Structures are given as C-alpha cells and as structure tokens.
Image: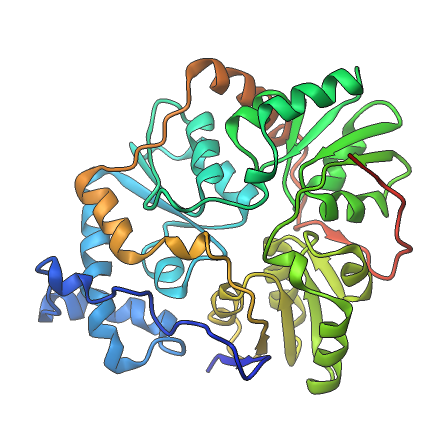
Amino acid sequence: MATLIDARADCDIPTRPAGIDAAARRGLRYTPEVKRATDPLYGRVKDFIPAMEWPLYAPLIHAINALKAERKAVILAHNYMTSEIFHCVGDFRGDSLQLAQEAARTDAEIIVQAGVHFMAETSKILAPEKTVLIPSLKAGCSLAASITGADVRLIKQRFPGVPIVTYVNTSADVKAESDICCTSSNALQVVESLPGDTVIMLPDEFLAKNVAAHTRKRIIAWHGRCEVHERFGLEEIAQLREGFPGAHILAHPECPPEVAAAADFVGSTAALAHYVAANKPGRVVLLTECSMSGNVAADNPDVEFIRPCNLCPHMKQITLENIYDALLHMQHEVLVDPDTIARAKGAITRMLALPRPTAPAAFKTGLALAEVEVI
C-alpha cells in the first residue's frame, strides 16, 4: 500500500477536484457497465481515492475513455496531474520532454494536453496537422509569463551571436526567437552541445544557475522563476531532515541552487521518478509539485512519501470535467500561426535531435554555487 504523509499539518491538498459532481450534472451515472470498465483503473489509485468516492470519478473517467476511442484522441498527462487524470485517463505520462516526444510521434488525430498552455503549443508545433485541445484556458505558467518574444529580440541585440537556449516552459513566440530548446531533463546536455564559451539560458534563473554549476561555460540568465519551486528553501530541508530522519530528499532543478546543493538528488520529474524506482528508498521527499508524490507512489507502494505542500495552481486548472468537455465539444483548440510554428519547430527539433540518454539525466549535489549574470 502506498503511503503519503503531509510534511505540514496545515497542508490544504484537495481530496478530489472541485466540481466532481459534474458527472451527475452531465447525466453520467455509475452503472454496472461503468463499474466493470473502471474497476481495473481503481486499482491504480485506491490508495489515494476512498472507495466511497470512486463512483463520483468513474462515470467521467469511463466517458472520457470512450470519447478518446470515438474521436481517435490521446491524452498527454504531465507528472503534475492529479492521480485520477494521470493514472486513469492519461495515455502517455511523463515530463515535458517525454510528452513532446510523444506528441511528435503519435498517430492520433486529436491531442488533449493534460498540462499547461505552453505544453499544448509545443504539441501543436511538433504536430501542426493534428487538433490540439487544452481543457482549461486558465492553465498558464509563471515561467512562460515571465518573458516574451520581444524580450528575446532585445536580448539578441544586446548579445549578438551568443546562442540562446530556451526552456520549453515558454510560449511559441519565445521559442521562435531561440536557437535551441531544453527541458530540465537535458538542459546541461543542450548547453554543452553549443559552440563558444557563453550561452544565454531563458527564462528560469534557478535552472540556469544549477546548470552553471556543472559547466565551464559562462551562463547569462533571465529573471524568471517557477512559483512552485522557488518557495522551497534551506530551512524547509533542515526541518524535513529533522522531522523525517533518513528520508532521501530529491529536488527539481527549478529549485533555488542552494536547495539543489543541499538535496540528496536533483533531476527532472522523470529523473526523480526513476531514482525512486531504481533505489527504493524507505522514505523520500520530492521537492516539486505535490501531486507528483502520489503519482510516483502508485508505482512504488513500499516507499513512504513525505509530501511537501506546494501545489501548482495552473496545473490544477485541469480536471476530469473539463477534459470531458473539451473532448465532447471539441473546445479550446490551440492554434499557432504557421510562421511561428516553422521558426519554433527548428529550436525544438534541434533539441530532440540530440542523443537520447539511457536514463534521465541528474544534476550533482553539493557543488559550489556558480556566478551567473542575471539580466
């Protein structure tokens, strides 16, 4: 049985999405047919969803899966989705890099992005002939909002000829102004692949600083930050080590560099999941978005997960009900103009053309903090 322990007594983690009674409002019922079809799925989430609540989820899950088959659609579910989305309706699950790769090769006619808007734009860029839907137009991103294409054009004027690496957590317009994209899984690999001794990394300041500690290249960074990961600090790590002795503390590289240096392991969400599966620590803390712990716990029932309480309000805009509505009504299609697609696709495909590692890349811990120019 998977074990989840909240790190703080005041955690406000919802037990189910708001408005889950939307199934009944849509005329969807928990029938014997729905029960038979969804019972195997419940086995994946039984440790996180009480049995008495499952009849509220199951009708929507069953209807979504039926609509997917009818419309030849797939759902790309990010690691930060809630468990009923991640395990019960997601066809492909993973981090931004994994989902981008799946978008590029799927033969589905429709892609539903169970993630945030920049991910849906990336899917459209890689598969422009497909219909890409985003269940909620409110699913934004603090990093993507921190920079515009106009900002990048000004940066290029200030630093002519310096390669620009853009994190995938950006708009299509920003990607179109970039030389190559990166994710937290391959950021160091991308930086090391570029010529010259100076690289501009946009827009995540902390990812840039964590990469800078691993390379001899001069890194110039933007001042964007993830509103989830920037809240983790050294005091919280000290409290976790004192309150949960022996716990392995795993951090995402969007965390502040001093947090990354003090963690036991640093990597992308895919790397964090891989670490848990490969090492089977008795107790673990994932310093990333809170839903990730439950999703990884489902595959590692013998590991005790200590959950931090940092939720992404943008990811939590995606619910079973708006996934159902998006598929039913074919609403909230993501469109990117052809010129932007052509320019942004070059940056993404150059990233995807790099050799694929045999396992998700990890950052070293305990390194000295690197000096980075933040513009």
